[in-house]
Length: 73
Image (tube, rainbow, N blue to C red; front, side, top):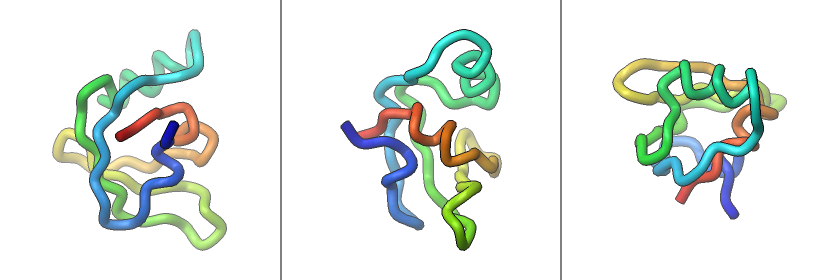
């Protein structure tokens, strides 16, 4: 299983599944990250947190813990 956290800078990934439950999963989905959407990793902060991504045409910053809940291919 690959997670969004493991995707290298400049690479694209397709969301396969969202892990987690309740409010956390709902918040991730509200940001536009749903099954089948393509994500591009733009930047990673020096200590690895947060990760800047592009999803559905806009830029978004995600915490490392949230990125671990997003399974990609």
